[in-house]
Image (cartoon, rainbow, N blue to C red; front, side, top):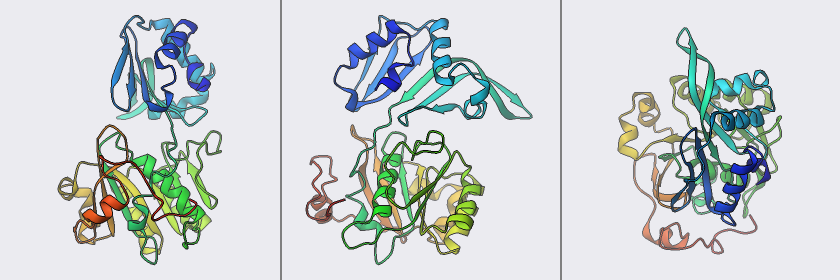
Amino acid sequence: MEEILRLFPSVMRSAIQKKIGNRWIFLQEIRVRLHQPIELTFDQNIEWLGEIRPSKSDGTFIVNQLSEFSLYRMADELREGYITIEGGHRVGIAGKVNTVSGSVKAIQHITFFNIRIAKQKIGAALPILPYLYDKKYLNTLIVGPPQTGKTTIIRDATRIISTGWKNVQAKKVGVIDERSEIAASIKGIPQHDLGLRTDVLDACPKAEGMMMMIRSLSPDVLVIDEIGGRKDIEALLEAINAGVTVICSIHGENLEELKKRPSLQILLQQQVFERIIILERYQKPAQVKGIYDQYGIDILKKSRYQAYEVDRSTSFNFSNNMDGV
């Protein structure tokens, strides 16, 4: 995790490294707020570095490390509120926002940092994969609150679909990675394993990216993280009408909540999504609460639920349904 530790001044770096110890695998976030204790978010608890309260000069050091002493070079990323660093880790930032005509021009006086630890979890999508395929891959929406593993699952599904599994041939997958979270690309090179037949449009707006990908790279499956705006919905419908399967995610708690969103009405009314997967927040990410078909029927039967071991009371065991993925 040297790419993360290098962001901090030496005293802070040593304290963080000592506090985490050999628990990096369980670490989700490091939150730095100037003049406040450093917050460490693990899978099952939150801990604090109360003895260290970052100063303004510490914040300047972190900003310089993130930007390699050139904020101008990273102006576009800073305007979006995050920077992706080597290893695929994403650093969210906040501070004084400058706007022009109602749009964000820049973030200055950066005083808040959220370092989200990128950890690819190979096999995270295995329990749900049989539900996503029925002679062909099905249009799928993955739903969950923040930090429930939506991106983790969508990333691993990309890897498996583009590599092939069991008797299912590998498909061409196009990833529209607007926030650089799925592939975590650095200078166009994905930091995560997305499989053999995956192409990525990094830092590209979703609506434009879907059309670009269809026109230029002829994907069988499109993967998009966190749809939301009306333009996203319109482009998604265009992609599906062009014969492309779409797998995407969205923030939400349950199916009833989604039905109340105006932007999603047309998708739900037209029964666009043949699978809707609901995730729940529970210690470890990627915990499946329900899997619905296009008619709103929960198809996650108890027998399958136990067989694929996505229940919180069990551990993962895929030997019954997957071969060499």
